[in-house]
Length: 270
Image (cartoon, rainbow, N blue to C red; front, top):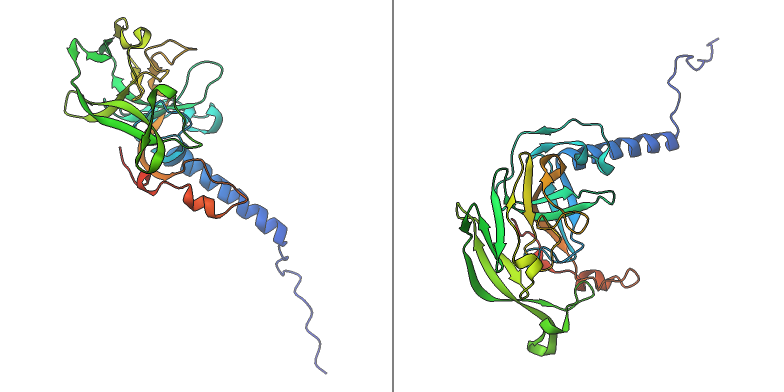
């Protein structure tokens, strides 16, 4: 008579679905942490200090490997990494960095001065190492008024179709070496258009916003501005915008997710 086959005592215990889900989520979280800390990280624009290049509501990718790593490469500035910087930013690079002071947060500005450079602003024109950076007047910059952007009545205008817009004077600056970008000028402001002479210390950079009259940057010491920014506070280099919204979307109205998007802002490099 044939004997019934008993269940092997060495059979693998069945894993619970909950345990498998937890393991998967932990692995995914670790992958995202590593990817964001060392490769690419998303960044959203909360202010108008980098107009005309960056609008409030733009989303961009930042390369984390361009200059090196430090504690600020990790979320919340966890002090788990030594300073490992292998490259100095180039003048004209747009960088994301951790601001100084107790209320530290991520900020984005353009690199104007490198260690050893002297910088001064006279009548709104940047003087770099004793030579004025060429500043050429070009066509006005306009931006539609939207939930993500309002402007002072002095700069309000109306475009075709009675669309309310903001209009600003726009200039093209050209750095030594030929790097060019556009900046805005809102008028005469002595505290930002005429400054003292700055000498960038070793291991630091001098940063400015492209919206020159509405940017708390290296022209002003903390807490009103940023002062010189140590290299180890730079988190990465701006690469490309991947999304942009004018702020008019509502969660309960799915069609507005598309109408609020600004597709012409997508895939713009630096």
